[in-house]
Image 1 (cartoon, one colour):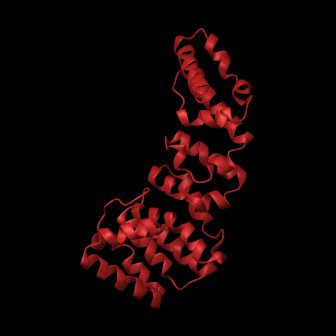
Image 2 (cartoon, rainbow, N blue to C red; image 1 turned 90 degrees about the vertical axis):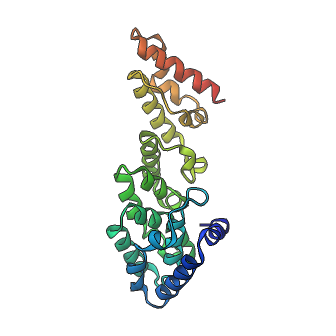
Image 3 (cartoon, rainbow, N blue to C red; image 1 turned 60 degrees about the horizontal axis):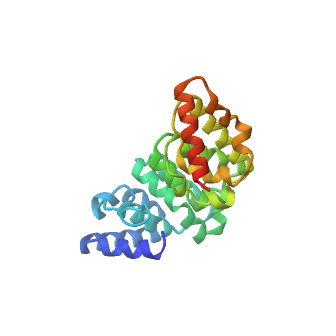
Length: 238
């Protein structure tokens, strides 16, 4: 949550909600166990309105509570993990969105939140997957983990421009994997998501090596049509 989002939160809160959140932040700062009671109450007390860049009022308010925790390193990670484990989807999303903020505030937190990212990626809740793939995951996922996270987004139809770090981390192996995925879609007569093409174009030869272009000569009309659409989109992504 950057300064713009924090300011937007303050503007959205009613006087009563602002007073409640200020008091809750102070309580958490004095007693970290207090977060367990106030964290689930945020949406009821502060509202559920959208803010900026995918953040909501409860996301931002919960992030503010997490930043107030007077814990560091493993103790912080353990408290965050419990909030995630016992929270509903909205609470889990707020925890995932806050991982980057927690590391900025406490460098010793480092990769201790990575298990929560992996948990989100094993599920099929697109809101949680998207929340997990922010700057924190972009820094800490290993190369293979990051590549599979991209594929997860493609399979779940999450736009790739919502993934942090893609421009820096998209490598030849990811392009190869996406080319194979595109070939599988074409072989099934299906359309390929448009946001894979810039990655393939940045790594010449990956599309050809997948065998996709040959599908343009398929005897199956649906495969041939899908290949023609794919090749047109690939060429149009120049």
